[in-house]
Image (cartoon, rainbow, N blue to C red):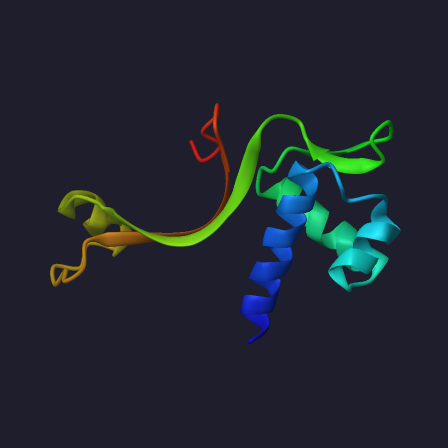
Length: 114
């Protein structure tokens, strides 16, 4: 399944970044088995999601500005019925009171989702 491959690729990219072992864009593309352009696209998408990625010339690697890691998961979060009605447009027949979250970067010292 393509989604699982992408998840594994992103987790591997995250690991390489945390280890400061990505190399330049071309080297990283070879490690991820993608094109150079795909590497730039992936990095740009992760940056838009809040991942503090930059290229460190001294280490010849993409790095995070501060400690953290990428988390890909489904999480059930209980919300109250008033907020749920706002989300569902005021529908009176509410059967579920969980709100899913999907893909985000999680950092030990900063909550980027607020």
